[in-house]
Length: 623
Ligand SMILES: [Zn+2]
Image (tube, rainbow, N blue to C red):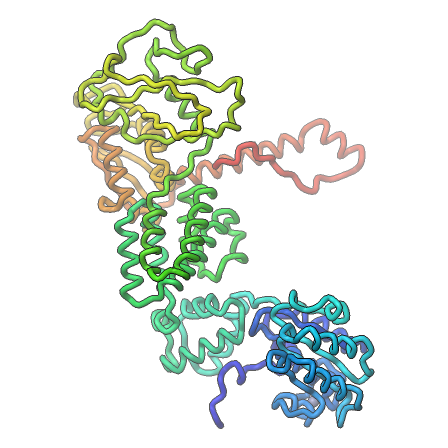
């Protein structure tokens, strides 16, 4: 027997074999059983999702010798001819190549004659949106008063291009893209029958690339089988389809989250060197970031809405998403999307991609306004007594001026991480716009005093970004034994907590990473335990996050305390999980309280009712 491509060989021959369109086949089956078959149908949906196959099966149902039936025999002459495309009473017309008025007139003239052998004359017009306006008008006449023996099945990928007059005379069915898991299950059936072995990851790539189209998926499989034979691996599949290895996407995103532009650029270079199409890669990156956002927002419920992901990848994307606020991820997405569009038109796609990753790496996380206010309050508390604040200012203290001195505080600490404040004028009512004196450190390394400090008055409501120095929390160590929680060997738990707060203030992304870790102390060292490789990688001494961690540790504890990051399989509760659990417990407590409220119990009693559901209103959306 001659070779048949998979898509034709496995073309469904009955409604039960049509994958992922149960909502359509069920309705058609019922119409046949109840003998309520309309005379015109419109099948809409993306390419390769089963429109034409369903139309042919439906034709068989109507014309099968044993029919009308919802399970055609596939053995009678009528069924066989329809399968082969040679039936005298079933006409398949390609709307794209027969789009003129002439062809439709011909069709209209043929319609009035009775079927040559079978029960019905069935016209299947594919890509019907391609017809000219005149052709549509001619078709309309026939659709208005069709002979009893005629059934029209119009199929289209673009229903919005079809005149309303035609739409209103058809029974419309919308075919869905086939969900990945359904598609994969079907591919596995077919492959096991074809005696082909394939790695699961490869199936996920095929599902992703075919975008819910069974025909596309089978064509890709044909291509891969003819290249690889009967044993197919993930990397072969990625190579043949020119799809970037998912690992590159992961590596790139990890580099971005650590702010490591050099590492990110080297990933881009790998992508380029291995011959992956940069345009394709950037498109994948858009989907990838989109999935991260969706998972960040939807959590485990996002399974159905993500592009096809394996379990382990889903977990990884979830971890990645936790590193940033939703707004930040959204900014990544917008930047990636617009770069991808630019890459498509650019003569230098690689360069555009490079500039994109640099931009992503240097993007500062957004500061929630509440955080900013909190920081201002903290700043204000740390101001020494007597710091000058004009009327209406927010810092307390008498008006007398003192010299500001910071014994032992190196100037470098003073402004370790400039914080950019972008106040929104709307957020602060005009009347109470606070004014604040901000003290900038001098250029020199000497001890800052009031005399050589530059004092600026800043209106918080002005739209210009303002640089506010952030005070370092603790003076550097002066002796071996001190009373601030750090002994020469062991760091107290309170001090570790203070350290977390310090990190949060200095480096929000790093604090996000640390919220997934457990901090403890041992002789001369702080031990950072993490549960996954991802975090261990991000906090490694050579990674940007790791470098920053060590830098801030030195700043906070001095140089005699070192840091050790270790991967652990021990179960422990991360700060993030702790907060999550506390929130749940709080919700449960509130619900119990509400349930036992006298008013509620009274109402329940009065109406003999029951509580169907209860929600805790979130006042604070910030996690
Ligand atoms: Zn039959």
